[in-house]
Amino acid sequence: AQSVTQPDIHITVSEGASLELRCNYSYGATPYLFWYVQSPGQGLQLLLKYFSGDTLVQGIKGFEAEFKRSQSSFNLRKPSVHWSDAAEYFCAVAPRGNTGKLIFGQGTTLQVKP
Amino acid sequence: DVKVTQSSRYLVKRTGEKVFLECVQDMDHENMFWYRQDPGLGLRLIYFSYDVKMKEKGDIPEGYSVSREKKERFSLILESASTNQTSMYLCASSLIRGVGQYYGYTFGSGTRLTVV
Image 1 (cartoon, each protein chain N blue to C red):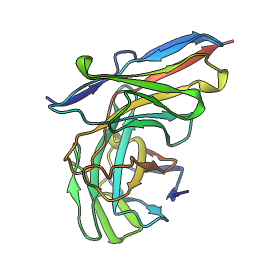
Image 2 (image 1 turned 30 degrees about the vertical axis):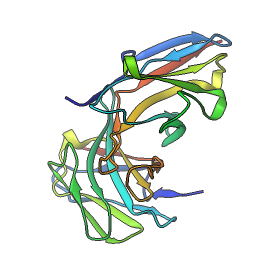
Image 3 (image 1 turned 120 degrees about the vertical axis):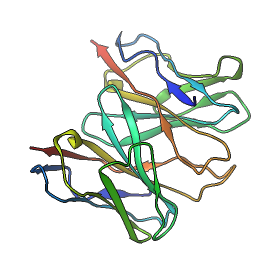
């Protein structure tokens, strides 16, 4: 079955530490890939997206993500986390040739310790 | 920037009421979507629309309907609200669909609906 999995429901890191949020997908062909962030009480904001080409994509707020076809993964990374990064993060995919629907993972809540 | 506006941030309704959630976007996007967000379940697609008067069911359409009479407005309707429809509802819009033309969504701020 087609799916998007974020294995970590909740992650806590110290401010200044590095961060990696995992995302795995299960689709027949490489879909379009996205990461969104949701701050408390807010809608979702697009961090970055992958369509094709360079497998390391840069986004806003210092985030990057790496697409690994062999692992069907699209993990989000940040070298040094700031307290303002505390939020919920969603990985999402849009299957190619699909109607444009976006399928979301369950989300990962990031807590940042001072 | 595209703006997606949801008319209410918070709503409290009684069981059995008919509830309307309104969403308006201001950048002439063809596609509009309604999701509900619940802890541990992520975002689940309720309905979506590619054009005026067109609608398609998402993954969890039961208990909901939609209306799109104008391109910029997409309404979600709870025909008879129930307590299990208490949730955060998010509206989104996007540019025309198609391979190579996918730009992701722009989301509204959400409506937190409580059914009592």
